[in-house]
View 1 (tube, helix red, strand yellow):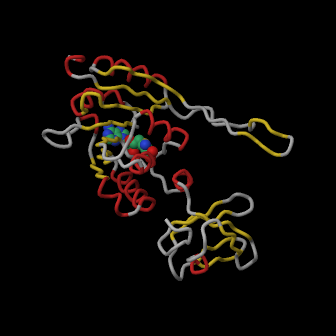
View 2: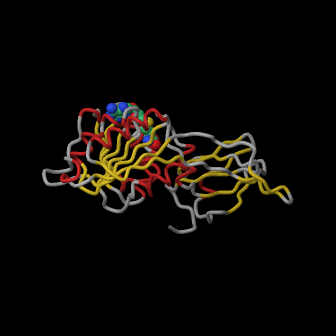
Length: 265
Ligand code: SAH
């Protein structure tokens, strides 16, 4: 990726109060703010990280948004998994290039984007057509059209079963963000290869209990549940301390490995 911004790039403008505005650079289009206008043509060819000024002389920093920044701004149908949990999910579910991942539900596509970026091939099961469309539009906007060849979203209920990727093939990973992941566990046990990983995000600890029971009953082992706390700090001169406010809770992450059939059956 070159430092110079080009037509078709997703960019964000950040003002001196930290407010962010995003858009795809399109010749002839304009960003409109309270504090004036910036034409997209003025940004094409400019280096990322430059300061630009609006027609009313307000300064903005122009940058390509990171995946985290895009997720916080993108149009959402369902509640997304936040970046603080997305990073750990990539490690706990051990997502890597070429891996066959079953994801359900896909919601707004935040988790899909994080896993696609690691090179995974995703089959997504989603029951709501509007969310399925939203997720695919978000993925294409941030990762580009090429990523869509690794992202197949199907309108179907994951509680009713999982089709293996092929007659002789298995999924490497099953990653879940839906209300009753324990209903998926028996299907995941059939669709995952031995040694494969299941990972579920659940807001409530009651969901964790049900999930852990189901994992134990269906040949999964090495189960673990974690929560991730993220405490930001205020750093200004001699005042260096944790911020007063933090997000106290989002969800629990439960992960386990599929045993070979001799272990589980
Ligand atoms: N992880 C997503 C958000 C998922 S929200 C993100 O980061 O953007 C939960 C999604 O699960 C919703 O879109 C809901 O429609 C879907 N869902 C709920 N039950 C389902 C089921 N049984 N099968 C498939 N999808 C389901």
